Amino acid sequence: MGEFVRVERDEAIATIRLDRPPMNALNAQVQDEIAAAAAEVDADPAVRAVVLYGGEKVFAAGADIKEMAEATFAQVAVDSRRLQAAFTVVARIGKPVVAAVTGYALGGGLELALCADFRVAGEGARVGQPEILLGISRGTQRLPRLIGPARAKDIVFTGRFVGAAEALGIGLVDKVVPDAEVYRAAHDLAAQFAGGPAVALRAAKQAIDAGLEADLDTGLEIERLNFAALFATEDQRAGMRSFIENGPGKAIFAGR
Image 1 (tube, rainbow, N blue to C red):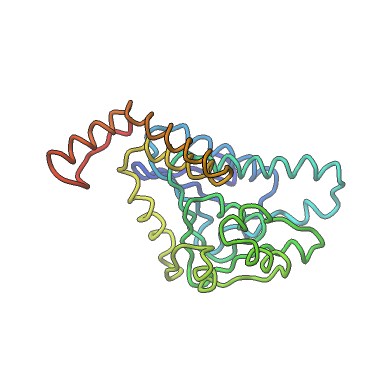
Image 2 (tube, one colour):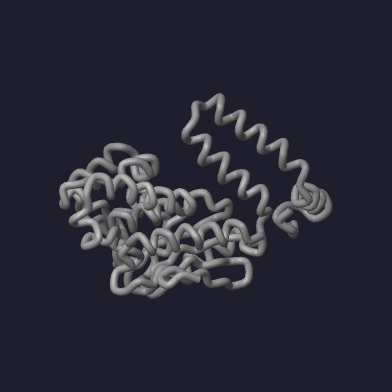
């Protein structure tokens, strides 16, 4: 357990909880602790789904500007690699991940939320990539892959804050609920996957993510190989046996 990031477990669901008041600024220590927490839940077979959560008031307000203000090119070249690496560990968690977004998710905070598979936002949430207002830019890769280049350019070029309703409308978040219900809604969404076939879910996530970076023929080959490999799992046998005997949707999966 880190000083600012901890893993909380509720049966098969793990919550990666950011807790660096007042705004969960992502300084170097927080970045390292996020990466460690993500690696921990990914490696734990008892964890079947994950929630990213910054608390009731704020998800994460981005990088620590005071830490960055006097940085040199050489320093930023190294530090930006650390930030990117931490986010990559989160994005590669081989289990369904839901971001519970309250308050602000700005800059690196929004990028962290984009590493999740789904985003649940409170009605008062505000998201954005305001780095351009500081004379720099980020958010140029995951954001356009999710919402398209034109919408991403609008958000990145202007640095404006996007409200929850607009974020839902453009597909930046997947669900909007009252602020007080954000964590519960995200937890409930994660719970839908916690009893699923863990190996198949990991394969599906990896195939979708890798396929998006490849041409269609390569993506289809990734899919084919994953499909065939899953016939070596206990869950495949349990799922098909249950379907034959009891109909769809009643299988109990061991996650193997």
